[in-house]
Image 1 (cartoon, chains in turn cyan, purple):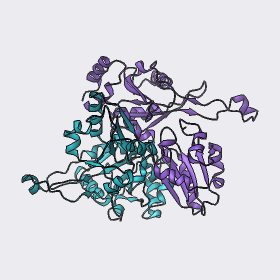
Image 2 (image 1 turned 120 degrees about the vertical axis):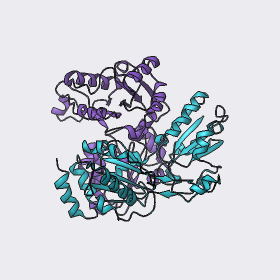
Image 3 (image 1 turned 120 degrees about the horizontal axis):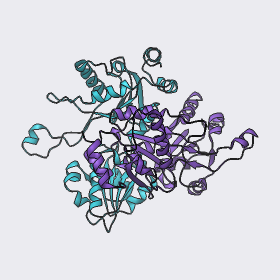
Image 4 (image 1 turned 60 degrees about the horizontal axis):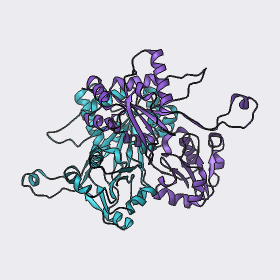
Length: 283
Length: 283
């Protein structure tokens, strides 16, 4: 059996009881460690499970899936994923490959940012499509998310923006020389995301949003250290969210009164928030 | 402390380890039992937690929130919610009320249908807004979901349809006579949902979808008895999904090749599925 097990949002205790029992029945345990990251070291998992944990990077999952699945017709193998297993395409590939090899698969779900973002006070059914924002570089500043945001906002819907994570990055020099030396991990902050968003609006100019658009910056959602700050994009540009992980929600114009009431509680400036709601967000 | 704890999708073991520890620290434990239902009896929870569990119906949560919150400044109180806590507005009300009473609140997230639906093979970021379909009656056939579906489908996005649950319903006679006698719970099936959808398309005629639109019927998502069947709405009209809970996904035209490959596996008729994908779903 291949168990694909969601670990939830924060640390070793966010696994479900069912998930923990499954891990304990497994002979090999892999931890997927590149589409998202857990807020604890993998050694903590080793200690908690009383089992060895093999950290699987993108390379391994994409090119060595048969190693991961070896003998899983006869023994139990766990593939652990931060959040919920179906957050990223790669895990789907692994499931398809297991099916081809006649390996039974059981998925054990958990919270992910895709549903836990409800913590920001906006109703999940009022969200449109989710977008991703990647770190801009000097030569690569992809802005296809702009069209997606515009589609959502034209309908009055909220947009969840997932922010880039860079794990196991190589510098251009190390890459060129084939040296497997990796840079420290980088996590996009709400501030950086807002900066990029405003840059793209400046360039595209179709008013998908403006510096006066209301948004909610979210840090460490679902943990005891969760921090939520709402305000205009301009206001969030230099709000302090602390450590990773961050995400950002652009508020849609269909925001309901009850949603506004909840979100106002953690506004940078409540009076200003109410004013903008009255001006731009009233049906 | 008020703990608002998600129970996940299926039974007593879908709670997280963190959630279980929180429950065990509580002096009173409430189970919200009207926006969704767990697939096990609440007695099973009593046994599993070794604690009394007070079943809270809508009436109680809406009108007796101060009873639920009584003394939670000094003791721990758990409010259990099937799925994730932020699925329904009512829980937001409870959190707002707790804040007013200066009661610290901790939310412990879990999987809900809003993210576990990724199990159907469609990518979560390709979903538009989520809609709800309620049981039609002779005199009440609300179809506002039609406009929402059309908005999603015009953009090529998938639509998750949540299907009605009726718990603690009273017959009109019992209601009129003030008798607190309740009908057995009812759960909308995929078949009923499809029938209502096609009726509304017949009436509205704006081609938000047709009987040839591809969809995925999903039953008991995230449990060992999960059943997924894909096909045209016409084909799903009499497919057998077994017991509750059911939900339905309308496939958007932006469906990616990899998504189609996964979904085809559980098609009523694979050849027909491929044909329709080629004809209607190719970019």
